[in-house]
Every structure is written in structure tokens, then in C-alpha cells.
Image (cartoon, rainbow, N blue to C red):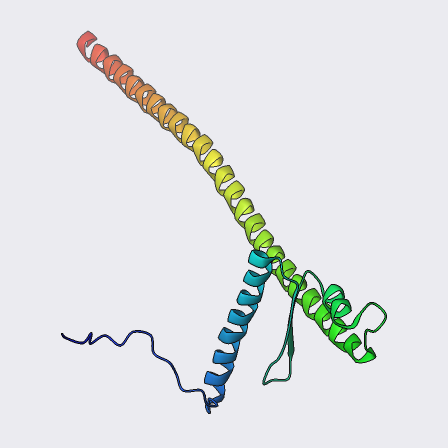
Length: 170
């Protein structure tokens, strides 16, 4: 029986990542994974979940479902909320507000881009309309030029006929 030579997904040794950039990247990915699992737990099991993570850069990242007040009150009772949770609540609210503000900024940027594109499309449409009317004017100008040349040829022909008739009379 031959062994499968493919290694597949391997376990990594649990130890501190020494390179700062790699450690921060790993933290970000794992944080997203923890929050995703917490969200799935809320959705699938209708569980109330609270997650607080302190990053290596000393930032606080939080996830609460349905909200922080319900989680804290279920842990400590309605009247037993410790005073030292207030900074966490404020940090969570600040993080949420920052996230919403960032999303709003992105939407505003996208809106500005769409408005700019719409203005460009209107300008192109206007230019096409003007070019179309210019094309009509060009055709009319060409027609007038042909008429003028034809009239000049006719005038030259009349002059030649007059000269020829004078010669025949002499």
C-alpha cells in the first residue's frame, strides 16, 4: 500500500512569531477568523456572544451580539455591572462608530466617482450631439461649395459662349 505523498494542510507549531510584520498579519487573519466564528455561533445557535481582543499594538477589537449591554448584564446582573467595564463599552462604541464612519466615507467616495462618471457621460453625449449637428453643417457647407463651383463653371461657360459668338460674328 503506497502512502499518499501529498502533505495537505499541516499543523504549525504554536510559538511566538518573531517577525513583526508576519505577527501582525497573522493576528489580523486570526482575529477575523475568531470574529467570523463568533458571528456564526450567534447566527446558527442564537447565542449571545461577546469577544474582546487586545492587539499587539494595544488596540481593542470587540464583537458583541446582540449588544454589549445585554452580554454584560447577563454576566453581572442588571445592577452589578462593574465600573471598569465602562471604558470597554466606550471603546466598543467608538470602534463601531469609527467603522461606520469609514464605511460612510467609502460610500461618499464611490458616490463622488459615480457623479463624476455621470458628468463625463453627459459631456460625451453633449459632444456627440454637437458633433452630429456639426456633421450636418459640414454637409450643408459642402453642398453650398458645390453649388458655388457649379455656378462659377456656368459663368465661365457663358463667358466662353459669348466670346465664341463674338468670334463667329466677326
